[in-house]
Image (cartoon, rainbow, N blue to C red):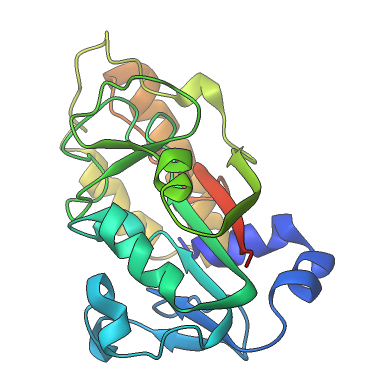
Length: 228
């Protein structure tokens, strides 16, 4: 749910001033562009796995991508391609789902069937068969300085984080009847009621909950600078 919009609220205006000035490309932005002056690159523009086939190397002050790398067939290779676009002294900012907060120990992903990879920050091992340590991926890039790497969990309620020791439950059929009622509500009331229903399903039927459908973020952000 508009992950970049939510993330920008956490970043603040100083972040945009520091990292989003100059020529900027936003890879996999969809309709959720990081800022209005950014150049959008999405599936209709080409294959982001091979982005240097479509965009000139060392031509951007900042390369930004939010919730896109997990869809790449080879994230290490894709990240290297994206890094090629960054000018000397430029930045790359990558945001990916945190595997423990988003996938919550379930693979294939319970919430996005197109996810091909999961990501962790500091953990040395993982439950996921397709897990990548995001810091290790970055450290394989040349001329790199990591400015920051952090887990972001604003508004995430750990009381509703799925425990893999629990069997995965199913949403009762009568929940579908409630959906017919929701369409008559205002968007704000509808969103609030949906969240309450998801929380009820989690507590009483052990149905995993995707908190990012609402105000929560469950992700990792890495900021890197290209030093020469």
